[in-house]
Amino acid sequence: MSSVLDEFKNYLESQDVSLQTVKGYLADLRQFKGWFEKTNGETLTVQRITPTDVKGYKHFLLKSARLKASTVNRRLAALSALARWARHTGQIQGDPTEHIKSVPTVPPSPKWLDKKEQYDLFRAIENDLTVAEERYTKRQVTRRRDASLVLFLLHTGLRLSELVGLRMSDLQLSERKGSVLVQQGKGGKQRSVPLNHEARKALRAWMAVRPTSEFLWTSVEDSQPGALSGRTVQRILKRYARAAEIKELTPHICRHTFAKNLVNNDVSLEKVAALLGHSNLNTTRIYITPSAYDLELAVEGLSDT
Image 1 (cartoon, rainbow, N blue to C red):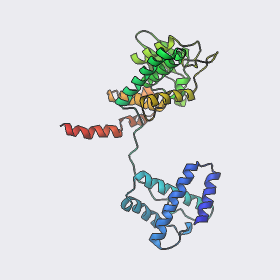
Image 2: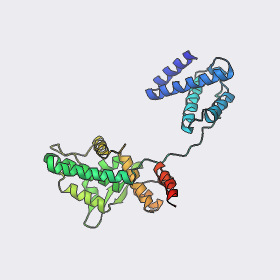
Image 3: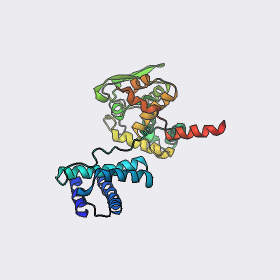
Image 4: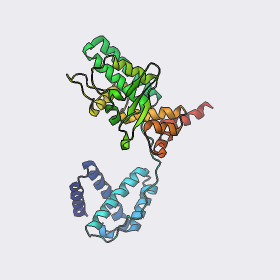
């Protein structure tokens, strides 16, 4: 079986499968090999694997090893990948894993910032601006842009590509209302996103120091400022995540946070979907999926009754 695993490894690498996936598959297959030989008292070959073996292995992983569904499914996926390869190369005629179902799992809720993390982030932004004003006068414009950008993301839920693609001509801003026109949303769809008070406030602070450019979010240090790159936005968010001691902060987490805050404020899913640019309401339903933190709060609430 060792030679077969070596051949399978070479095949995976030729398909440009990531090194981590290759290592994971091989480790999972060695686990199966140990179980198979101990259970059946014979050396494992791909030709000897039967659907009964796969069912038995799945039952062992769930009932005896008591592994998580995600781990069981990962090990079955490795076995399935081996079987498909063996069938493709003519080593076996049928696929013993073909009719074996994966273990149903509850889809994880998307990552968003809870209230404490949002508080910590807002405080980190305020401290960053204060320090820049007191000590780093040359960086004030950059820091103002960074702060306004993060606040804008959290109050509009735009995707990264939508954010960096905004032009000044897409912005409508007055004292009491405002909006941005997303010209190229996902699927090429156009939508208008209203700006609440916090988004307008953040934009005005940025507009007061912003260098001249056709793009709304622009570089600061360049002699001819152009559109801010997606990579720069990601670096800005990572810097604030470190300052706020938040595990992770990405444009998508900001988007999820925006959506979750809307749902928590009893905004209907239809309105949330329209704001996010979702064409399928089922995509928006993930925001009513309780997070682990939501479940913890629900259980802790019992002690207060």
